[in-house]
Length: 283
Image 1: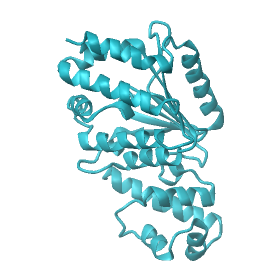
Image 2: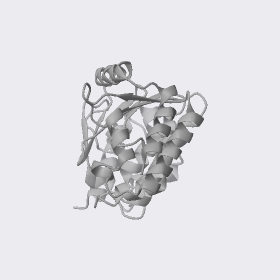
Image 3: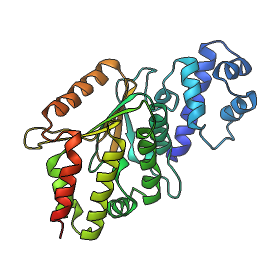
């Protein structure tokens, strides 16, 4: 069975179960969730082939207390312990996938909150299109236009007053990029210089809302992680995503992240100078 159809069926089942559990008619449930009765009927119809918009999911979650992950069948409990999201659910050629839309929605609802970010490579919000196109060309399951679209969400969030974004990378990862080593082999010197310029400009523009800490990978290690306030942790493990939204788990990941911040050898105000020095070495 198609994974997307399965996701829709799970959503309809859980929406129905939630309405029955609360002993509400469709009209009463729609009113509590702040949506039209016609929209509710459409969502519950077996003929419907579209998931609701992120805004609708968030409204339902806030009105009922059920997590968005549970509504979509990505967790077994309203307050999940660990939800594994196969990468297949994150792939849809030519448009944002269901998971892309969720992640964009999480960034939007995190405006005004603290977000902690450990990227798999460079921070998405600092990448220009040339870097994204080079990076995605290596992966069969990652589509460039999707990646470009989703990278705008954290940048828009970082530009929102009141938002607090902390990011950690290893110094080695930044130097490896500047030198065109490892996964960056083949990216031209000119593209690397432009990307270093972009990162320098954005670091200076966004500081102190966005603070980038660089630690020594010989002393610390962490997998790619995004922590959305106290709401959830998103882990990227190569072929799957894991979503955590239990309080104790979120706190544990925050403590690990804060340990990297404390161990950082390059502090945010000094990052632009480091980037300029690395740019001067690019040949």
